[in-house]
Amino acid sequence: MELRPLEREAYAGKTFTARYQTGGYYDIRAAESGFQIAYVPFGAPVERSFDDTFFGEWLEAPVAFGAFEGETLAGFVEGSPEGWNHRFRISNLCIFDPSMRGSGLGTLLMTRITEAAHALGARMVVLETQSCNEGAIAFYKKNGFSIIGFDLYAYSNADPERHEVRIEMGKKLP
Image 1 (cartoon, rainbow, N blue to C red):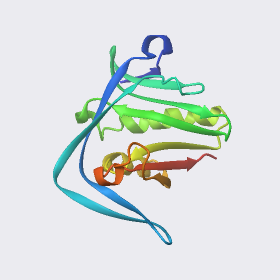
Image 2 (cartoon, rainbow, N blue to C red; image 1 turned 135 degrees about the horizontal axis):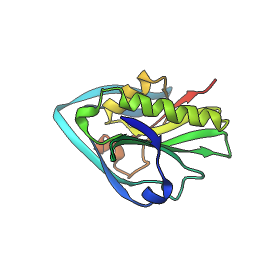
Image 3 (cartoon, rainbow, N blue to C red; image 1 turned 90 degrees about the vertical axis):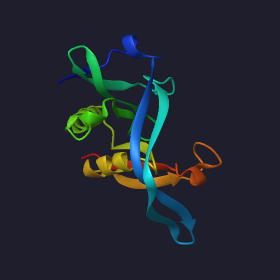
Image 4 (cartoon, helix red, strand yellow; image 1 turned 90 degrees about the horizontal axis):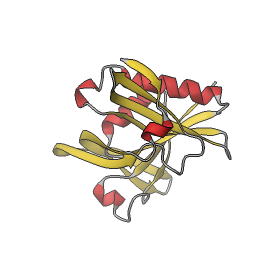
């Protein structure tokens, strides 16, 4: 497996589908004292997916790294500085082959993008995931991220009912 920068010219605008399986979700509700969070298992595992684009136009100055087996892209991570607040936002981290998840590849990609964020002078790294993506939440926590916020209606007015609430996670850099 070789990690190398993704060439913007080769990937910009191309779409991909990210898939994951989940056994439950974090039920997040506003409460008088802030938020309440409780894990709720599904009756059976559920597959979720979403389509996205490499090097989204909204990224200020995107940085991306790919993990390649030969010329096949096995996974990638991308992010961009947020100039106004000196943070670095990871916009995507994806391992395409589910059998490669848990192999350390995601950690290698996370380490590389965090190093790039630090080199760019970021004070912290932030990202978003969904309350139903329990694997991603566990991975990010394992890599030093904490929950720093929620948006109950980021994707639609039915996010809480769909069990897909936006969770913001972050990690301060030294």
